[in-house]
Image 1 (cartoon, rainbow, N blue to C red):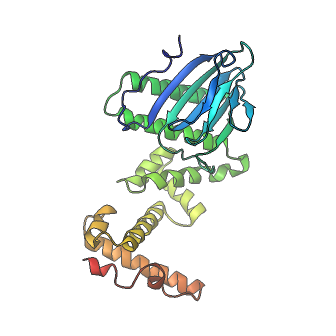
Image 2: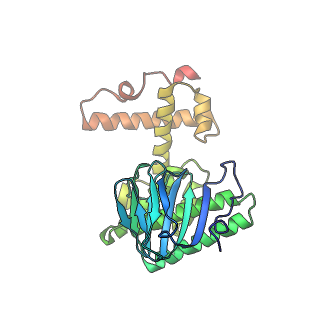
Image 3: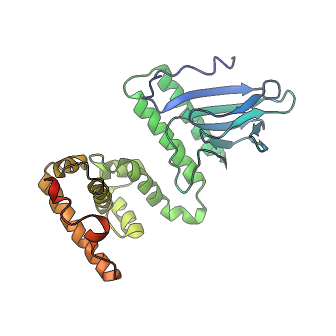
Amino acid sequence: MSAIENRPHLFNATGASNLSYLSWGKRHYGLFEIPAVRHKGWVYTLIQSGSPILVTPRKRTTIKKNQLVLQGPDFQTGWSDLGKRACQQITWVWRETPTIPNLSLSQNSFHKFSISEETAAQFFEIHLKCRREIAHSDSYSPSILKLCHEWMDLELGRNNTPLNSIPQTRFTYATAWLQQHWQEAGAVTKLAEYLQVSISTLGVIFKANAGITVAGFIHQKKMERALKLIEEGTLSKKQIAFELGYRHANDFSRAWHQWKRREQKTLSDHSKRPPFEGIFCTPGAFDRRD
């Protein structure tokens, strides 16, 4: 198949889909070199066979079988090879920033991962799933493609986790998931399903690693968000309550003041700093927006 046939136009050109580009197949970069350019998105390229050369402004790096390159949208890269050598690869370009646990990413850099045969096979299955969604798209396809991206990032996070850190792996994945989904209804149940553990096991994981329940972790995220909204001063009490998923403003008001009292007590127990209200917001600022 030609390069064009291997690069279908995606079903959604408006940006509603997280996936903006998909390609696969054999390449002869020694004969048809790709110059170093920037790309509109985060590029994931898995080499399935061969050893092409990744070209950057500063150096040339050989990428071997079962190595995956992840490059940011502000980083210039291209591909080359020696003579008539061929390679086989699969590529995705995602619009959204990766969320790989335990990895700091820059838009102006690239990362190289060496993955196992098993992980490489899983990436190939994800690529096939993406192709099927594009070929037979419906209203569920953007959400499924987003999950494919998240699955890829979690597999890379798992691959990048030292063996002695495995006991904390589920907690790491759980907190990474909650950073994105804590505002969703039924987040605890969804998280348990995502990690394939029971809700009680999930509670044990959080107690062991954070000293609080999952619900307590989500509540803390809500209050931190509330604090930010109050400091911004653009929303009323009712608007903040609805923004955080409370049915009644009074429920939020009660939770907010209880949280403030606990935080104030923690500060007074551990430091000589001013009271909580003096650090985070003007006393009564919340009540002025009733």
